[in-house]
Amino acid sequence: MIVRVERTVPFPRDAVYAWWTDFQEDDHRSRHSPASSHRQILRRDGNEVWLRDRATRPAPVTLEEHVVLEPPNGYTVAARYPGADVRYTYRFETALEGTRISLQADLRPRHVGHFLLPLLRGYAQRYAERDTDFHLRRMAEDLSGPSASVTPRAPDPGRPR
Image: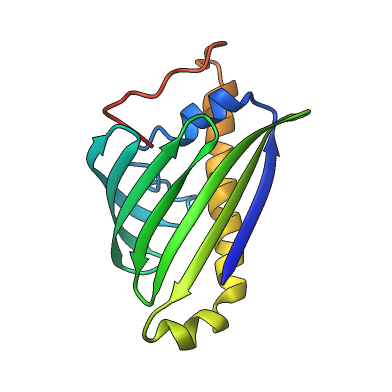
């Protein structure tokens, strides 16, 4: 099953990439986030990052994620969810209005996922849209708030998003 989300934001691609790849342990701690999880940044090696997310919402689950950064064009994540192997890619493209952000997630069912995933297609699409929009609101606050600088902050190599 493929899930796609596309949005355009009024920020330069380099700023969007820097923000989106500055992984933080509290990325999903807000009560406004569609997910609630605690993230551990396990390690970073060049353009690869390994994360562990312990989610409590929408369902209790622990995910191991392998991120491959492709600066400044985007990144890809591979993760093993209960019932599905998931690979999702964010792409950041310069657009007239700023930057086009595209998410494409490929969910490949395993075991019980063969039965459940087709039933959850609409939910998966809506969840991806809500999660993307949540992060876009946070990015807009950070990039256009009173403390935002004119030059985008380079991601801290020890703290990928």
